[in-house]
Length: 155
Image (cartoon, rainbow, N blue to C red; front, top):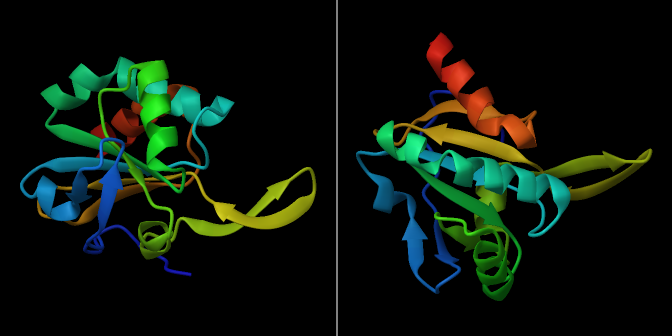
C-alpha cells in the first residue's frame, strides 16, 4: 500500500465527476486543494463530512481552497448525493480505484471486531505547488473543517 507523507508531491490523478467532467490534479495548479476520500454516498459519516464542507464552502473559497471528494460510487450515485444535499463541489467516481490506490486510501478496516479491506476515510491538503501539506487519517466527520483549520493555523 502507498504511504504518502507530508512534503511528498501529490500523485497526479484523473477522474470523472458527477456531471461526466474529467478532473485532474492539473486543474488545481496554483490553488490549494482539499482532496478527501470517503467510503460511501448517503451513509451517516460520509453525509456529515460532505455537509460540513458544504456549510463551510464559502470560507474555504475565501481561504483559497478548492474541495474535491473521491469514492468508488458511480457517477449516478454522486449526482443523487450532490442533489440531495446541495453540495457545491465535485465528487469523483473512482470505480477502478486508481486514485484511491495512488493515495493509499484503500486498506484494512475494522468493524465490530471483523477486519476487511475497504476505502479509508482520509483527507489530503495539497498546496498550490502540488505538494502534500497535511494528511488527516482520523477524520471528525461533523467537525472536519474545524479540524483542518486548527491544524493549518498551528503551522
